[in-house]
Image (cartoon, rainbow, N blue to C red; front, side, top):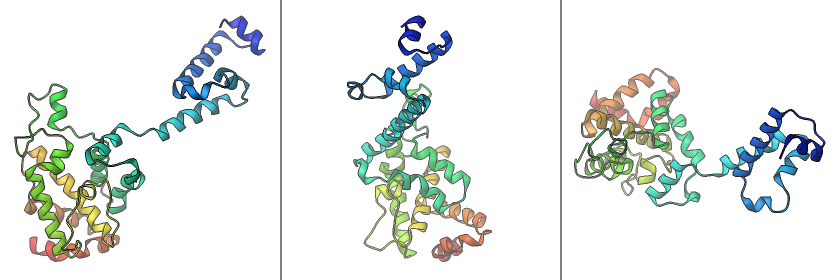
Amino acid sequence: MSLESFQNKYELHVKPLSLFGIISAVKLLQRQIPKTQLKHESLFDTFLKSQKSSRIVYQKLISDKGERSLSCQEKWHKDISSTNETVDWRKVYQTSTACTRSSKLIDFNFRFLHRRLATNSYLQKIGIREDNNCIFCHNEKEDLMHLFWQCEKTTIFWQNLSLWLQSCQILTTENNLHLETALGLKPDSSNFKLQINFCCLLAKQHIWICRLRELHPTQNNFFIYLTHIHLLENKTPSNTKKWKPFLPSLNQVS
């Protein structure tokens, strides 16, 4: 549509650059809205008739981003074979800040949930590594699920952690850490949710640190790390409740 025909049709006097901006905004909006919504009324006409056209564009773009599932969430659903209804993503993202004030732990969990940790599978894909073998077992493809849950070395670590939590009377003897809870995709909601979710978060970071150092994750090294975090957080009185069930074991380590 030429500038002259636009001015005659809509009785608007605009400059060529302003017309170009309107056309670009409408085209962008058209790509965001399903075609079925455009059958009854021209989007271009709706845009021009509105007294607050910029709000229409903004609301549609924000609405689309809010409804569309992020690719990282879709990948997690596929990995744990779940549906959208079984994962409360708002709760998942808030768990780390609810159980710790450590900026390093919160940052790590953010990168973990958004799948921003460079495993060997990814490094091979971008040409940095020649193979994608797991650092721990050297047999299987190292992706997030294998590294943090499926690897035999990691499995032993989670089993020992479950036994320790049972000895602290945080987990019952009939229960072990499940995949979704361990990875923080379905945070624990029991009376000991603070301790369990915190331990799972710290365990994930411990696994990643061991991976970077090419060491196997072990219970003893985890206890040393846990003791270090306790010394840092013990300076804040508000953390006393969280650490109370762990103190007998930590005193033995120290």
